[in-house]
Image (tube, rainbow, N blue to C red; front, side, top):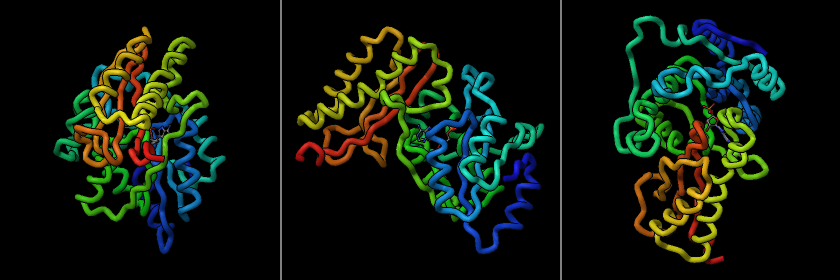
Length: 286
Ligand code: AMP
């Protein structure tokens, strides 16, 4: 496996290896865990050349967010990626990606980037779409693997790729969870024991919502209210949003019909977590 830190070298590598080979790409911010590894394993199976990027992207963090403290341990990450058989880790510095005077940004401009995460984290998606466009240009992947954990991000990236006519298939993989249901996240490493226990409330509330739907509840407002009541019983939890939307539109639904997405963001202490679950009403009839 090669470790590459410079854009020119990354391009050379791609130009050397690209001929008739398929390139798979997993973008990450490091702090790797089983969620990332599930993407890497699938990418490894599908691709001749597999590139994993590790870059905590400053432009997608707000000024009050955790860019400085975001978990970084490149040596640990290199070992994990190497053990999965990837060909390259691309781990550029911030200066390499955003040299002094940098001023070009890529933005998906619409409802999709201004609701939910876009609303709570202004500028977040602009940072995501900018770094991904740059990485796509440097690596020119045939396939890029993303996790459903960042559900809204997947929709934004699909739109970006489609509207910029990039020849890059977006493959989406399910959320990997801990045994107690907590969605695995690099940010889980911030938790003390009490917070870690409290963090299970996100998954518990999603499972409850799924149960209520299966029992025939059709009113999203009632489900959201009951989820709120449940989460508010947890003293360390502070709800940012809970909503039930169409899984491709991200528009609020008036009634639970067909497939819906229940999506939430909750702070546990100082740590902001997101999670989601797709629920099919056909599950209700079985
Ligand atoms: P991040 O390093 O947090 O930017 O995540 C890099 C990729 O890993 C994104 O596509 C995430 O959606 C995905 N990912 C993060 N956590 C999980 C998880 N628990 N299960 C599946 N995919 C995940």
